[in-house]
Image (cartoon, rainbow, N blue to C red; front, side, top):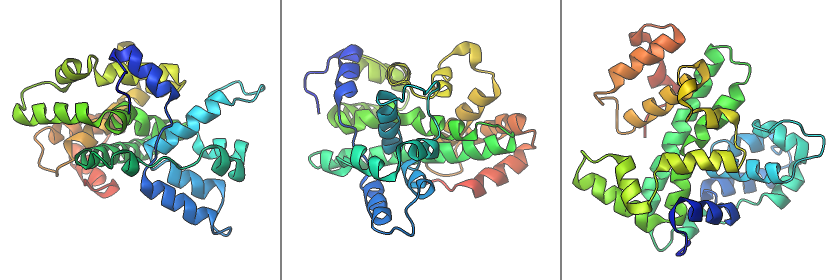
Length: 274
C-alpha cells in the first residue's frame, strides 16, 4: 500500500511496479488443479483465471512484458496465452500471490465492497460473453476479458488504497445524490474512469477496453455490448427491482433484436445477482 502515491501520475507509477494480488479462491483453485494432472490443462486454468479480474490482468501484464519477437498482436485470449507460455511456466512466472485477503487483513471492512466489485465484473463478463455469442462475434473472448477488466481500476484501488475507498463509500452512503466521479476527484484527486482509461493504455490491455472511453465508438456493437452488460450488473446488484432495469431490458433488446420481456427472462437465467 503506498503512502506516497500522489494524484493520477503517482498512482500509475506505483501500480506499474506493484505486485498485483489475486483472490484466495483463485489461488486455492489453481493449487487444486496443479495437484491433479488429470485436471491440469490450459482450458481448466483459463477458467479459473478468467473468473478473477486481478489474476487476468496479472497474466496479461506478464505476457505483454515478455512478448516473443514474432508476436505481432496483443494477446487477449487467456487460453491462447497459456498455450503459448505452457502450464509449468505459468505457475512459476505468474504465481497466485500475494492474496487480496492478506493485503486487507488490517482493513477487513474494505474486503466486502471489493468482493462486490469483483462480482459485478464477473456478472458483466458473463452477460457480455453470452450476448457476443448471440451476435456471432468472432472475438467473443476479447469481449469477455474486456468486460471483466472494465472494473480493474476500482478493484486495484480497493486493494492498495482501502482507507480512501472507504471514505468515498461513506460519503456516498451519507448523500446518495453525490456523483461517484465527484467524490473520487475530491478524495483521490482523479476519477476512476481516468485511472481505468490510463491503465488500459499503459498496460496495453485489450483494444476494446480502450474503446469504451472513446465517444466516437460509443454506438458500435461491441462497445454497446460491454456498456450494457456493465450497466445491467450494476443495476441488478441488489436485486431485480431497480428502477433502471426496464430501460436496460429495452436497450439490450435493441442490441439483440429481442423484446424487452424476453431479455428480462434471459438475463435472469444467465446469472443471478449477488
